[in-house]
Amino acid sequence: MNDIKTENELKKQEEITDMLKDILYIRYGNRQPLAFVHTYGCQQNVADSEKLKGMLIKMGCEMTEDKEQADIIIFNTCAVREHAEDRVFGNVGQLKSLKKKKPSLLIGLCGCMMEQQHIAEKIYKSYPYVGLVFGTHVIHKFPELVYNAVTSGRRLVERGFDDGEIYEGIPLRRDGSFKGWLSIMYGCDNFCTYCIVPHVRGRERSRRPEDVLNEARSMVASGFKDITLLGQNVNSYGKGLDEKTSFAQLLKSVADIDGDFRVRFMTSHPKDASKQLIDVMAENDKICNHLHLPFQCGSNRVLKQMNRRYTKEKYMEIVEYAKSRIPDLSITSDVIVGFPGETYEEFCETLELIKEVKFTSLFTFIYSPRVGTPAAKFPDPIPHEEKARWMSELLKVQEQIAAERCAGMVGKKYRVLVEEQAREGVLNARTQNNIVVELNASTELIGTFQNAEITEARNWILRGKIMEK
Ligand code: SAH
Ligand code: SF4
Ligand code: F3S
Image (cartoon, rainbow, N blue to C red):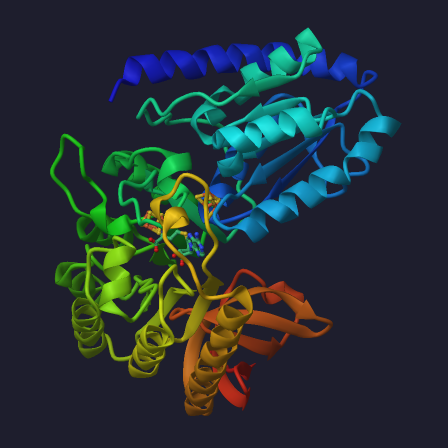
């Protein structure tokens, strides 16, 4: 890691930010420019957008939720499935009329999609009103990119390369005030054969434990009650750091910080999930009893084709151990249906695994071929309609499991964090094991811990009432 290099780079960006304050103020008619940032995709992108917002605010911008009003519009895009990309193209298409009405509007596209050459080229060719295209590797240079775009008046594409550096100290504006994300590492080295993430996010690199802990301490001090440690594969945290450490150790150190808060993490890769991690979870009250452990598929042959590097048996072993150590553990997962070459019999092994584990909830995806990944070249004879039928079969199984779990929770008491208004008079609260409960309560309670009793389960929606402390 090269601290001097990254510090100097960020200093340069700060100087450019200062210049931009005046430049943008004048460009937008002697007033504070309004900026709009929309995020697609996963929490890594949400965390990156919090940096973009932090930098925009330092440039003198005010954030707006209304893109019609905005002077600067940034879409932070996701490439994980075709559907995600189609949504971005559709939404960028709608910006054309805004640019026509306001020629000074700066439209920027960034994020994972832009790290793919064919996409960046398509945007450049087909969407002439997009002024700035930049990838995930150059996000720390955002002020310089804005500066170049507005002073040159030319369209700019900057896709950089993965320099393997971590830029500590980029300005950050978190979206929430009591629930927040904390990146502990970036990139991914696993190269699952279906996945674009390692191609667009670069190599795995971990932040130093003291940098993570300082950020966690400052979040707790400023009132955060629910912190999620983030990485594509948190279990391999620490690889490449001078100091020998592990994710289990880091998690424990975060939990040891004084204060009334809870900590969770995602994503755990089953190949690296250790018993030590489960022990740390079992022994620390502040660590949520929630494990997001994507299994993707229940067939060992398909898992091998996916390059996941674990078997169904290994997966079940860690699940059994975790359940035995943590009685109220909630396990969630990601599943891919219809991987190239998967047969119906193999899909049925996925159903069996779901019935065995009894997940709290599942994120389910039909396989989507990604340009440049090995699986995109595998023979894929099953038509989409058939995969969609498999998917509905899977969802039925999962709904049944969720309904049974919810019914079993009625009458029990939980400490919940009140998170948001669901509708008039009804708030959503979350148990530490990640189950949402609806409460009749006033919005003043948002951001506080409460004790609640579950009064009713309607399929997989739980209702509860607040109890006296
Ligand atoms: N790093 C995490 C997942 C990141 S992507 C992990 O390894 O678990 C989130 C999820 O998207 C994946 O778990 C997978 O289920 C799904 N996914 C990724 N690529 C996909 C593709 N090409 N088609 C369908 N689903 C995909
Ligand atoms: Fe993609 Fe696999 Fe890395 Fe997860 S671990 S981001 S699924 S390559
Ligand atoms: Fe999408 Fe990039 Fe996340 S591809 S899922 S936003 S890492």
